[in-house]
Amino acid sequence: MSTLLLWLHIGFAIFTVGPVTAATMAAPRLIRTKNVPALQNIQRLTRVYSIGTIGVFVFGLVLGIVMGGGVLGKWYMTASMTLFIVAAVLLVLIDRDLRAAVQALASEDPADDAKVQSGRIAAISGVVSVIWLVILFLMVVPS
Image (tube, rainbow, N blue to C red; front, side, top):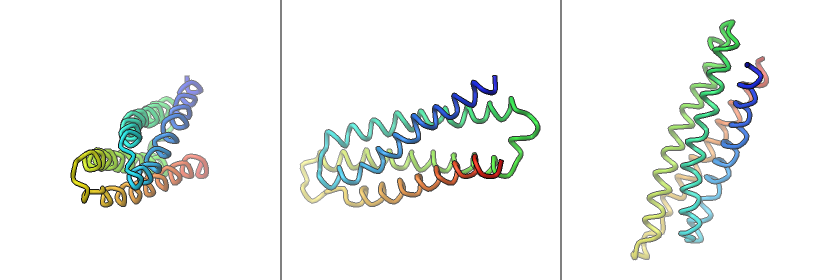
């Protein structure tokens, strides 16, 4: 059972965390080029894959419960779960900024070029990427 949960945990991590990171990193370029259809697609992808990342958390939590032995009480597990929740909140902020950028670029006002959203998305997605790397480090090294 724990092997299946580990596979699901790792599979969700590979197939959701990677794509959501790539999508959020691509968004600022699309905002600069004012490519609204592609930006709408990136916004949709970000939302779908962000929701999918919840599977990483759920299967990791269930795996920790099945393994027993106080695995979930270890400092690195607590730190990684906390960082995951922080990353999830930041992904919600990125989704909000992506929606605002799509609305700004789709409007008739040429002065609104969504530069504020572009900068925020770039900064937050960089922080989220670092968080994913720290979580990966915490899952591999302290064990």
